Image 1: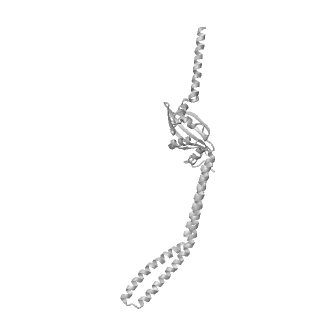
Image 2: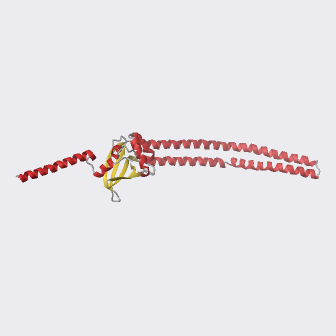
Image 3: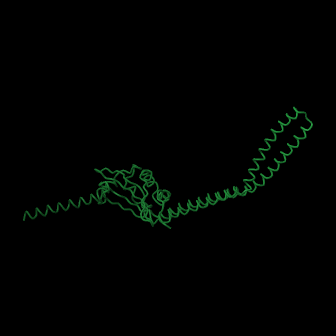
Length: 293
């Protein structure tokens, strides 16, 4: 009988120890895997007043939050945090629409400038025609004046007058040749054709840019922020930060690990939709398409 009470007391003691351990686990880590608890308890590098647990929990920016442990490709113990961002698609659409609006603005300005240049070509032909006639008349006057002067001069005087006349004539003749070339160029329509070709090229390029924006943005279904750490001997080491984009073409990854600390600062500063708006312009950098449409 004594042994029975001894064994019973021993089992009760073991049960009380398990209950106490469970309570302690709840208080310290919420009964999570030890690696997750270590990550949550680690000091947040972007703000020493926070831990990862306090900084990454209760974020209005997140539609849902999950934590998990896993073994990475290098056979290391690792922890992954995932935050599916709320209303990410509307924010990405705003980025797309802003860029399309900018492109249409550039196209409008290009068309206006090229249109003015095309109109100017027609004006150039008329202007150069007038200048050409003026220079031809000036050249004729020089010839007539030279002939009249030299008719009444002796040999040496006539030679001297001819040298002066020839210098003036050479300059005016070069101006006639220059204006003739400009007139021929403007009057041939080559400049106008070249400008019209440039206008069409701009239109095609901008239309292609807009089409690429639609291929890049229109297939997005959701965006999830992903953070990973390696846990080694109770040391928490950041390993990855980026976004996983679920799209019509499957899942796409946008690695932002090089900007890890900067994004962590924004997570603390912007807890809600302002964070989603902040990261939206950068989420699809490096991703060329999310749809084939």
